[in-house]
Length: 304
Length: 238
Image 1: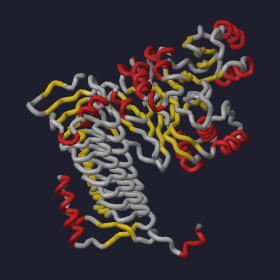
Image 2: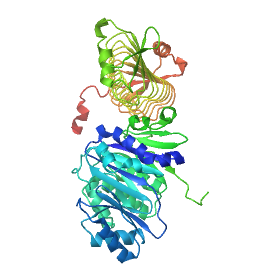
Image 3: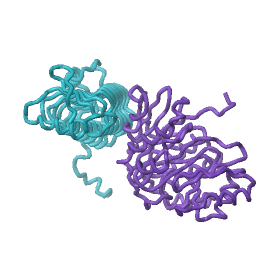
Image 4: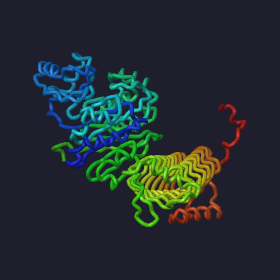
């Protein structure tokens, strides 16, 4: 089953309360996905040349401070880690590739949940409500966010198998559905140099997008490629540093609803999640068409 | 229990923000068989809840102010249910009799497997509208999505707008009337002659639905009846 939510702020008021809205939306999707929950939040961009890593440690007594010292030694600069439950965000004075590469090489016990300049990903097994409380989602301010509640079908219930999956810098994917050609596709993508951390089908879809984007496709083109190259059922929500996109497979068995006001754009598996947003009763609401890519993007600062 | 506050002498208002869905449905079910109680209800703050006013079996009227989730008015018998908003998957699925009216749009599988009664959608219906319908009549003011009336057995689907791809795939004896374009017909579904009796049937359904359209503008689609029986020519396909 699974539940997906997405929220894109169009006003500073909604940006200021992004996490609170996201948590409320996520909790509404508990019955669709009680196994695990996760969010990708786009907030606090770091200066160019720096990078933001979200890391997960299976060790509840992880010494994030000593990791910060090691990163300082390696790159000259690393801010105090921002710790939330089993995750920590570190801002490193190095490009994302270098910072992520260092962690993978030197701390294989840690899991890189996301890397980029804006994105932060948090995910954990358990009920959405418990997840929202443990990670203090209500504190978050930000421009846009995606969330997922998981009812596992294709792989085990683990932190790593939870969504969102990050597949490229500042890029992430959440998925409701199941893919049937993921094993073959994973092998093909591995030959193209795309790395996978789990046996999860959604990670393959995420890897597919990363590959298409690397090969020069626009986000819209990459998503349109899914219509021919992915076999299975899906409603996808994809986050980028500037916005988010939604795609349903042509059969469109998996639900999705979109809604927009002057203050926000929201997507969810069900209206219940959108009904909790301010002004929802007067929002323009519609069901995304099968096989059609919907994209919302904010203009980058300095670009008119 | 907070089912209370009557706003006029005979309309009972139920606020789903303060009353549980189960409580609402239990109250509506208690009226089955003509049991005494209010005959008119107004449900506020549905907030996309599933199974609102499901399984009714009484001549009552339920007005819902807002959007509803899955299977609203499912299995409806005798009752009139009006949704002043949108409805998600499976509105009026397996309806037996009565009337269900949605002012807005509805998601997939509207009126699925319905055996009787009338479902009116003033907006658009998504994919699989009237899938496996077995006697229900469905009038859609807007358009319907792909695979509508899949394996439809009995009843009428009237579409004032357009129909998506694979309309009436593997259809039995349901009648499909479409005013606009049809993206594509499914297996064994063909266009048929629109005779006077069909124009009159559409006229009656439009009137019952309160939809203003000229019945003469509709085209009729139905079964070519080529998939009914085993054909020896197809033996190689098995």
